Amino acid sequence: MKLHGYFRSSASYRVRIALNLKGLSVEQLPHHLRKGEQRAPAFLAINPQGLVPALEDDQGAVLTQSLAIIEWLDETHPEPPLLPKDPLRRAKVRAFAQAIACDTHPVQNLKVLLRLRELGLAEEQVIAWAGWANREGLSACEKLIANEPGPFCFGERPLLADLCLVPQLANARRFGVEVNAFPRLLEAEAAAKATRTFADAAPDRQPDAE
Amino acid sequence: MKLHGYFRSSASYRVRIALNLKGLSVEQLPHHLRKGEQRAPAFLAINPQGLVPALEDDQGAVLTQSLAIIEWLDETHPEPPLLPKDPLRRAKVRAFAQAIACDTHPVQNLKVLLRLRELGLAEEQVIAWAGWANREGLSACEKLIANEPGPFCFGERPLLADLCLVPQLANARRFGVEVNAFPRLLEAEAAAKATRTFADAAPDRQPDAE
Image (cartoon, rainbow over all chains, first blue to last red; front, side, top):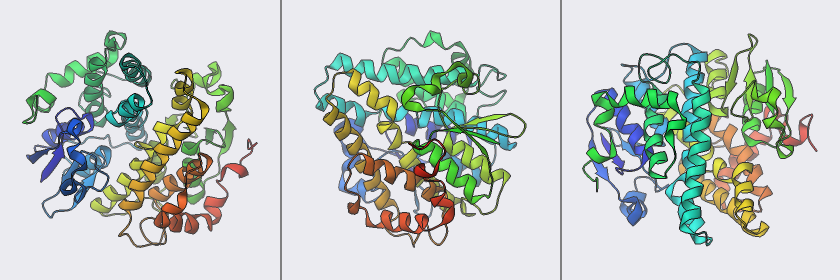
């Protein structure tokens, strides 16, 4: 399989963790987002949306959208599972993941920040915007797992929620968010980062890291 | 079951369609988003995130995030299915849904538009922002199903993709987007709107419609 990604893309980071947890090795094909390489014709022929991550399976089929890719990996490589078996528990884990992937990350991604700059906002306003989006989202996440057992987001094993949390906390720090306000999230992050699978997926371990 | 929603919330609209497709009737509990009712203490006790939709099941468990709610409905009430059986096809349908629920809707929702106004943008700039987010997202969606059989997004029956598309097109029109640029999406929308299940879920048919 081939993973089209970017070392700092938090959606690519989620998929890298999932691949590591499943014990799958892939060829990494980096596209430098800040240089606009995701809009090169050769990549648009693979993913017309011009977004990373995109995963090419061994038959050449292209999968897009990080959560859809991760659910596909979980359905085709069930061990270890990335979602609980009970439907209500699955819904809780998915809701946490979506609080990040729908409510938080898209509001602070590169495209949105570029647009804010185009509208004439000062750089400090743009960074404040990204900080606001991260604080709002992570505050919600902290509440969503306040009563869940640790050390991971939903118990003793990393699940889809943890795959989304760790990359988002990295973004939050880049935008200067005071993450100590989220002790339960930091507990889950520490448990995850202590594992080889999460550590090896970190941005600074990727071939295109700067 | 009880559905906490708002007639114009496109995420609530998605869940209303899913409930209708599954033949489930729920008690609707409206929260007026423009008046900030989603931040009332009584609702925050149910969903600390202060977002609609939230679904209370018959045992009082609370589910949040529209896509997580819909996948739960599909797992607990399998007929008619909202996702194909084949993993790769499931991933395609989910990716389309996420192109709307992650990449499009959150960038143009009420909270983001309010924030833009607070930053001093003129009303026409705010509406242009919402139009941009919808155009970018729907352009991607048009490409994602360009080679899929109709009349629905992915063939002869409405699936998760259609549940996300119809509410987003309603948003796009409210923001003045020229939707005729998306003929394949309009074909799917027309097929959906011809059904009773979609028609009954429309904003103007809800008890809190203005």
